[in-house]
Image 1: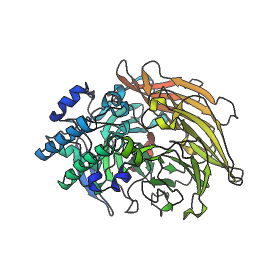
Image 2: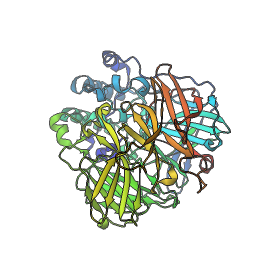
Image 3: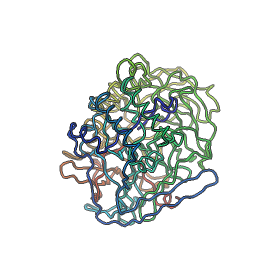
Image 4: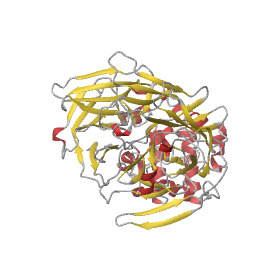
Length: 593
């Protein structure tokens, strides 16, 4: 989740662009002072079955580069040039004396501890199934995205600042192959070739006016020296994965999507930054919604300048349709996710947004909370050509970062949405361990404007998913991660959201055990093409890491069982760090790539 980064920086002059810290010999004093000898845990593959390939292809609209990292080494490291070393020396001064990482939320010692520490790339490597057997419906690949910094930070670093890395487990006839690769964004490639970080950490670099000015000046110098062209995009592609229009994308909401593909041996290749024939500008949400019936994709972008919100969609072939700018959103807001029904699109205007005064006078981040703002929900028809039918509904105290699902009721006169409400929203960016995500059901009466809410569970639940065949339609079951506290996930629960008010909706759960933490669950249906199949007839999958033994596993759980029984466990040959959002892609869709 790297919101505001590209959009915010693109509105600034070159002197306000912030560089990202790296680890170089000149920063050893800083690192030793922080007691960080290394936060990267090297994992050696058991069986390397990859081969290197680098090709450049030309499509009618876009030139893209496909890159597969050689198995000879996880990353090619180069010695920084003299100008780079000079810039890095100035960066050290900023990080040591002007803006050291004082807050735990930007201190690498805390942010990159335990299973949040980064890993090197892992080529396609055979895995061992140590319990049960992998069901045939899992033939395909589960791919999860997440931040994984290419260079260890010298200065402030936020959990969302890392370069995107995809962890894919490709399954075929009961066998599994794990591969971990960076998304080869333009930012990643430029910094890899330079042997140094060149671009800013937006979430951790804007800590006060002095630090922002210093890092901005340094970034301007790097750009003027020709080290990087921000017009090529500065996104991290570190948030999620989506499949639509017969393409697979790595997404981060600060940039355009990056098309990726899986090879026949399970390797991950980055195809390139995709602008949809020049029709997609600047950036796009990392949470597009795909209608399972029409195969259309709905999305949006947001930013710090008007229009602060722009809605758009893609047809079933992945062709982008015209933008619908939403000028009735009168101030920039943090819109990470949204929901769709068969008739409408729902946006959440929450209490997190741009807060430049806090950066200038309070020494804080430009992204912060406004306790005086009243959260609201915006509703617009799915096929609106302009915002004339956009309606806003005040919903005090309702702050959503993720939306689970929504649907129409009462002949389209009522909208029902299920989403986690972030309590203590003021801690969302800096103290995630203090927030509590309360899953709520919200009903919006479009005739009267009345909004009714009630909680579905008292547990701290987020990163929730449903059977993807029910997106935009009334569903019964939700599978959510249990915060212990967030961002660590200690288990997964199944909720029955058809239950009435004042009822605990959790109907089954699976806790991973002491010292074991997982990620976002994902539901895989046994028979996705069978309209008669029961909604919960399938499996819940997730990566899980044991911090005591250092072992990572891929778990497959029976979604219908009372305790989410484990039907298969795969021992992974490399550590999979905690991450963000994932996707299961079936074999027939992988073949289309």
